[in-house]
Image: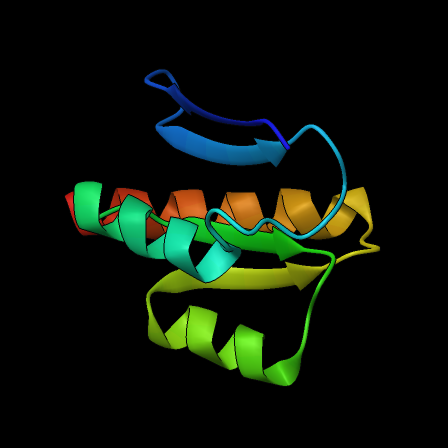
Length: 94
């Protein structure tokens, strides 16, 4: 399975996007979260997954995720999480 990891300087975001919707054997969401926090420790990471468990949610938050959202989700959940993360990042820069 081919994956892309893209970054956007404009919005300061990184995305792991499999071309097919199935679990990756190369790197999982927790591993991806760890890499992002290692490269950009001050970043606010929102984990969105189709493989949600209480254990992975807890581990994500312990490892520095700002929020954890399970699929299926409403777009309003994403907007709200991004808005809150942006406010938090702005407060930390001040």
